[in-house]
Length: 225
Length: 390
Image 1 (cartoon, each protein chain N blue to C red):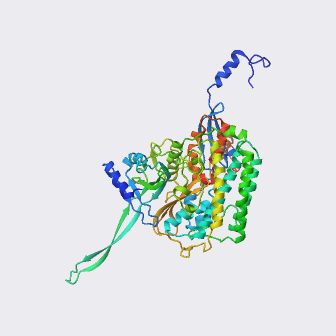
Image 2: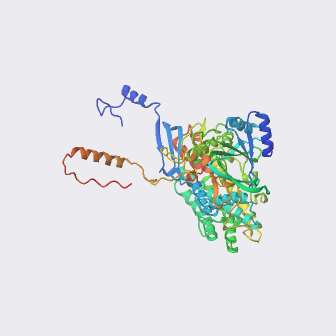
Image 3: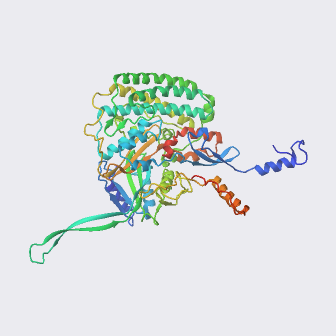
């Protein structure tokens, strides 16, 4: 099994225009990953699957990760010359910078033929609002079909060329993406518009139109949500 | 009933019948099967398009039990998710626990004592017996053999559940594994009981096979039904007995021996046809191999601690990083993907559910078969909706 560095070097030699970055995992597991650029991701995925050395024919896990915008405060030490002519003072300077947020799709690839793995590849979107499209890897590994639908459902990554991109766990009318870190659960979570309520509204309007008498009957109790 | 417009008593013949027949010919019927259909193993729905009785399109619909388990996992401590993994696949709480513990141990670089590793193998193989026995019962129930095979299976399942209960305090929601070992050390009496169950199991398997395996009706209903090619199974990430029924030799216990599986002698049964009968047969054969593993593990289990002395239970904060750990669950590969940001809660807590991924090919297997076969094919996948929907 090649190391992620070797795979990266081979990919860069094979795809000259592509950007492949090694994402180092500082944890104890030592599972490093490769960050691919979305434009070349599909071609690289096909290569990884068909390459005789790697033969990553099996995509075990595909999932999303949300990385919201983060404010990073960096402290740097700057020496300031003393105007009085003394020794320069060392002052700590704090600079704030905003690290832009993005959504990430992570794929854990294994080889069933060679019984090796994992090779982990990651794709990142441009931001979390309007540039959320990534190429679907379902045409390469069918195992991504439901898992990419789940990522679309819960994180809002739009996979281009996915054969059937619909919500899978939440209901179709649901608007938000609940696995995002900034998701706020609505207060009326359990409330659903039912035919019964609509009928009540129509009946009310009907009753109001039919009874011109100034002494209107007290309105019916509003349905409890 | 179609009545002739001229006379209600006139025999239906000629142009009128042909017109009615033509009007229906080639018309497709869309049937919503479920979510409360008893054959769907929970709340699961299949939008089936039928031409006559033949399935021409099938779209699985699920999510009725979705409670966003992964979000809950991100909002609680590492240990806090352990009892919740029991509720994923409620037949296999011991293997779910193990998969989660394994992923966290990878993340934190945590060692596990020998005795705990043996205990994990014993409990995982008991879980496999339990799960496959139930599956064989449910599959027969789906095929229309109402009651008897399922009750035979449940009788045996009860013996294993008794073992789990006396060890962990709970029949199904065991919450037994910990990061760095196990929770309770079994007594010698427990081991005796486990040995007794293991010894008696082959006799039950013989009895069950005499009842079921050679049954003509079962063969007629399952052989050649719901075939899955090895190439599609690999591409679609199918795992577990369903993959091995297609003849693909991939069992994590052999391919990537986690725990102490490399110490045991057992074989991996493989199917030839990838049909529903093979998927049933593989499970029966796997149970016989599980019994072998159990015999070896119960014989060889060493004395010693069951919990690593350096492991932290409270204030468990693995350093930043990520890990993906997976084991061979009874239903297929169950994996956990964890990202730590150095705090007490995981930044990302992801479950790779085997039955969710195995459902990918449900439509491919059902096309061209009758609606009654779709029920058996679904039954042979072995899904649990608690895990599919999470």
